[in-house]
Length: 198
Image (cartoon, rainbow, N blue to C red; front, side):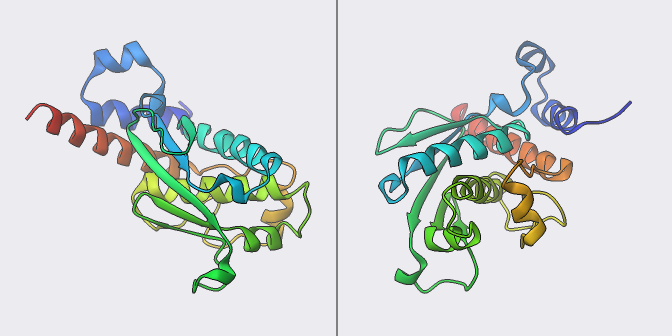
């Protein structure tokens, strides 16, 4: 039997949830874990860039079985996880050189000027590069760790080949990263369920 990314996620969730009936009824892997992503400063990004970036990030995260609910302002729909993202310019902050974004807890900061630099300031590439940045940082939050992978969207440093690739197609999560996301989400859900029944 060939174990694909989605089937590996399903196995992890089935094992950790301990609920075969619920699993059989749903059958959607991490779709059982909707993730709300609140954009705190969307006006810092052009509407076409933001729209395109959300589409790219959503597709990459979907490859790991994660369903994203993009939200703006203060309104938050109930979700298993809620992540806040703000867009800033690195020149206004003292940050790690070359870093295009950083995640701390459930908050992500994206440095738009650096993303633009890596997109070669090309409006055609900006939404695609930004989408990969969003998927990468959301991946950190959903894994609950700052670890990186040797390949895939969770690489520590993308090289020129990676940037060339992402201009035309999505770089997805590795199977190991997808399983790590599923595991962390399942643990969070188990803790939330335990708290609710106390």
